[in-house]
Structures are given as structure tokens and as C-alpha cells.
Image (cartoon, rainbow, N blue to C red):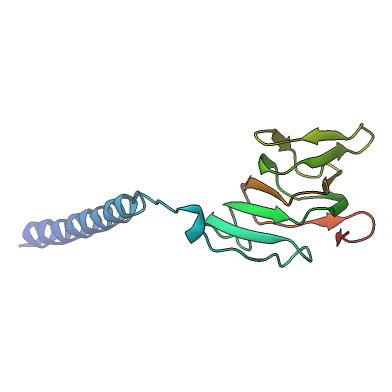
Length: 155
């Protein structure tokens, strides 16, 4: 009798584990849904961190953790010397960003330019007058910006 009870309990535990595994697999498969957004359907909002800048979150949550987003700085806008806690990977989509690491010369970064900025690295980025600057940014953790000088402004 005791062996039968043990077998029944083990069977229920096994079924429970199987149900959890199947639910996790279904969740993973649901997360693999294709996403297609024409540019006109991408939703932009005002950046909470920089006046005049905009953000379009593509995945994740910049307030909570890992994310990918399009960001826009108005033509002539400036992000003074600053750092971020997390590493950043950036690709310039349009416009020209005037970028400099602390202690280095400014470089003009046009469409297709790439940046990898380790967390804590002091740098500045300005949008050259004439056209807004749009760039793609990916971070493995929440977004932040810590200004070393005056706050970002729009010229």
C-alpha cells in the first residue's frame, strides 16, 4: 500500500514538472513571434532623460533592464560630457554625430557608423546642425545618463 502511495505521489510530481516545462516552452515559442514595423508605425515619445530628444523602444524596457531603441537628437542638440552605467552599442541611422571620448579628438560619425562604449566611459555626443540625428542603441541593462557638465541642451 505504501509503495502504491509513493508511486502515485511521484506520478503527480512528474506530471507537475512536465506541465511547468510545457508552459515554459509555450512561453518561449510565443516570444519568437516575428515583428515587422514600417517606419511610419514606430511610436516615438519624448525622452525622459534629455529635453528635445525622442525615443522609440523596439524591445525590452529601458527603465527596467535590457533594451534596444531608436533615439533621436534634434539638429544642433548637444549631450555634454557624460557616462552610462551599462555598456552601449550604437549605430548611426541618419544625421551626423560629433562624438568624442574624454581626452580624444572629436570624430564625425555619419550613417552606418558604429560605437561600442563601455559602461563608465566619459564621452560627449552632439548632433551636427542641418539634420536631426537618429541612432540605434542597445544596452544590457537599464538606461541612464550621468552628466559631468551642464545638462544636454538644444541649440
